[in-house]
Length: 242
Image (cartoon, rainbow, N blue to C red; front, top):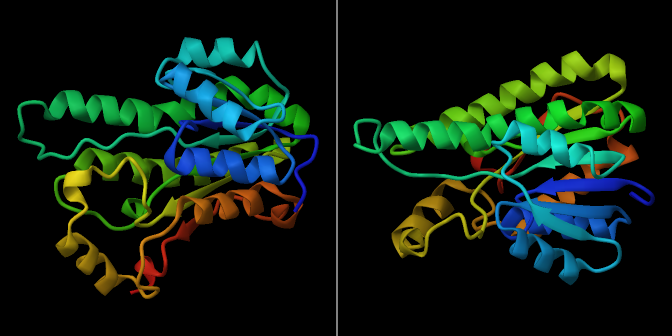
């Protein structure tokens, strides 16, 4: 599944799943642009990938900054909207409104801003969009209303945009990771009880590796998926099958 000659832009690509996706796309031959809220981390990740990879700072919730980036790079053929946050808490907490607004601005507003900014390039390259959804797009959990709402929105946004952009030859899909070892999970939550609960629900009986999400991204970006659009692909060890 060669991606030679294609420029891939990965948001939130400095670490975790985003970085694994960037590495996987680079290994398949794509030229990588990593953007992250922390520009130094993005540049460091790009150096580690090597070749023609580059990294820069970007807040995906800033629509004007996304538009400016589109004027500086391209033509992008693969847009990976990975940047995201999770701020656990109840909706009656004192900081719930701020957390809700920031979570929605990044997790759902970010893909919206990036897709608007790069539509012209994606139409020219007949490219594809890969959004990062979550198992929380399908099933909820306590103390994560903002995150679940944002990721549910990502799944529906993916479907809507696949329909809207089909005539432009742009494919739009999403990946829904399950429990994967990433920096997004605080160390305090990595308990034996949590892992046991995950194992009970996950048929493959293990936590996922970010590289396994990267493999799914390569497939969705490749010609092997040229008739696939509007899909949210779970990469969850079977979690949603139970």
